[in-house]
Image 1 (cartoon, rainbow over the protein chains, first blue to last red):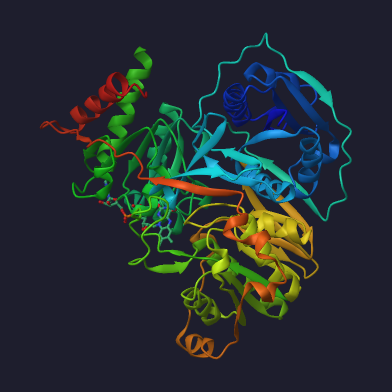
Image 2: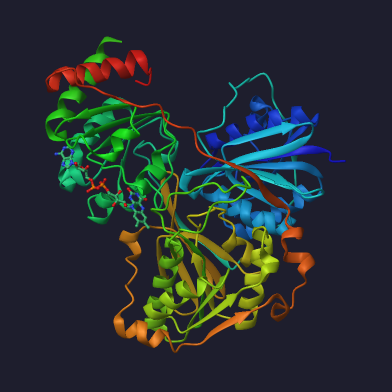
Length: 328
Length: 265
Ligand SMILES: Cc1cc2nc3c(=O)[nH]c(=O)nc-3n(C[C@H](O)[C@H](O)[C@H](O)COP(=O)(O)OP(=O)(O)OC[C@H]3O[C@@H](n4cnc5c(N)ncnc54)[C@H](O)[C@@H]3O)c2cc1C
């Protein structure tokens, strides 16, 4: 019999990333379904001071490895430290963030623990003590339910921005236990970390995204999307055509070979809606398309479509949003 | 520098995916197969390293006989030789089983660096690279959007949420590739390249050649499996905002609809 459910948190630049709280909330649901306590694993530099916050989201007790050598994620140091903690806990399941670092960590940790990993899941269910996880495959063209064989340790990485996050209950603090983990010698290291401090919203975490495609005609025209994005508090994305043309950095690319995004609202401007683009944004809760071609395939996926020249329409639309924001 | 690229063959990204009668697999009969785009970035990165430091590029893949075609494509791009692990025992294997097989081949080749895609566009398991590195007990760096080397170490840039990290590793090491076509711009196979590729060595290996036991890597050994597939939810037909409105009228109506109906702004 297992003793707990484990959730792995992600700590960066002095704070837990939000996805940690989503994973903790999901972990709480799984732990309750299995009738087990929920333990958190928090690894990083300076993480001890914040560890009890995981309790706000349902974690009972947090095991903390706090070391200056763990400031930046490198699999070579994180994996052995986490594996050592987990091996002492005998979990029924481990939930992790399917963030950039989380997916990398999950894979290596699964190999170390000889566990079965369901990566980038959008749903977890527990029926009669049996776990099942759902994950999009073939770029969201199909959804797969995964199950584990008898005796296998289930590991589930959770796609950010998809699973419900509990409201923080600040009265519920987690117990914290510091672990003296030996950080191994590593042949890999972080030389520098550049975090954007401009307050720009990251695409994979954005509530609203305004994306431009080949219809934008040139890099300078993206200013009209940026203005709209500013009014909406949105992030700006792009199609591969716009990225390949060098108008936008590849970190802005949405799609099968770009980022998979899950915003509440996705506004596709001058984007035709190729299958590889839909693969990255098709699960957005609400989709708006602006395209001058009424036959553009994007319209068949959009909740609202506007057939207009974007250069006429977007500035007027931005103005209308501004009016709305100033009146409510 | 001796380089191994782990390559997976995937359906073309344009493919329509149909669920098979068993509800657990997809219909593969009419699919067009390509090199997983991220693995193609790895081939390109490997060829650039070879151009700088010499050595050989070996393509290692696991799958049925049709994968030979993708390996030949990589050979036509400029890789030197190929190894295909083709054995029915891997039917239903999980990522760990596949990684054990790939690692066994890599161990035998004993390269300076292993490159592969950070994910594959089919089952999107996102596990192969880190798992192979773990089995080899090598360091790995993930999601490289740039890759520089002085022959003894490798430096990459890795995008993370809201920024980027520059990472360095001493060889031997494994690197998984991220980025886009714009970053890697994989070269095409030239006609002379295609002719030459036909004569390059391509080894086919069975389980017994890997020194592994079926009980470690077969479908029966899988820790996790797909039990059912379902189509994604249909999106309800959308509405074109028109009603004979002019540009300003449509903008007003869209804002109203997003605010009052969809409640997303
Ligand atoms: C392996 C592979 C991976 C890929 N990965 C991705 C990916 O990750 N992301 C991605 O996006 N694509 C990807 N693609 C590319 C994809 O197939 C399309 O080529 C691409 O999405 C097209 O981008 P687009 O819609 O901006 O351009 P186009 O298809 O050229 O569409 C431009 C649209 O703008 C409209 N337009 C033009 N001018 C105006 C105007 N003034 N006002 C309003 N509308 C206007 C046009 O009517 C048209 O519909 C991939 C392709 C392959 C083969």
